[in-house]
Length: 331
Image 1 (cartoon, one colour):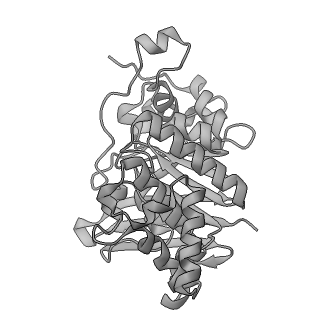
Image 2: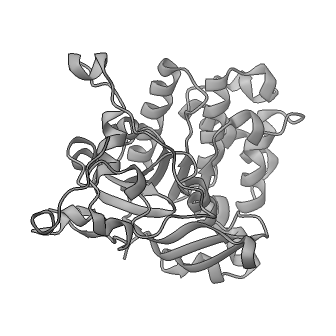
Image 3: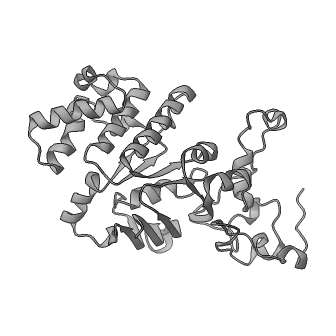
């Protein structure tokens, strides 16, 4: 049995004429001990997906589908069961640690809080565990008495990781954990996450807009666009030879070390993701797609087999599709 199964997940904010579909029928699976990356531009539904996993969305969100964690549906859990699953079954490392930590409490107390609540430890035992967690994430014990503003950005992010590990979860969801960090600290945090996940056999779902980071960190990679997964497969295969034009555009946006052409002329993608409240008909990517067919404006595309363990939602994935229609020209 998979550790995490997401089945036809749909998240809509608001209702009636103001309903905004943020996640539209996502299906993903994460095996125990494996690492899954979710990539895409801002506004594609990544963070909504992450928050939905533990029902952390605001009351205005309507959720449908199934989120099976160890076979139990998170969306139908009673409050007591859900409270027990949070931290102990699955935990989240949010982006922007300064906004996630309590500014008026020492970090040692903040790390100890879930331990005291979920493991019913004594204060002395919790303090000892805090010291062990700080050591695991590379922080000296003296930092336990510090307030968040007394730590650097990288140190605060290490505290968030220590908190996520505090109750021994089987799944960690990392929502852009290195966004606000410089590249050197970013690399250190990513290596730390990889090391801890491997040592403790924890499953990882990492969300990022950076395809290169996910390709280096994760086993599998899912690319989201306009609330849907448009490509999913082995991480290196998706990064090196994406089958969906959006996946190729994301990959090409990052210069490759040693590739002079990409370094001098990195390629981006014109335009912006569509407004979730006003999605275009047909394939939602077709207004920005350089290889769209005339039919793409009318026919939606769904994930199709695209090779060994690889799926993509593109008409060109279907054999013979391009031979039947003329490729629309682009200025």
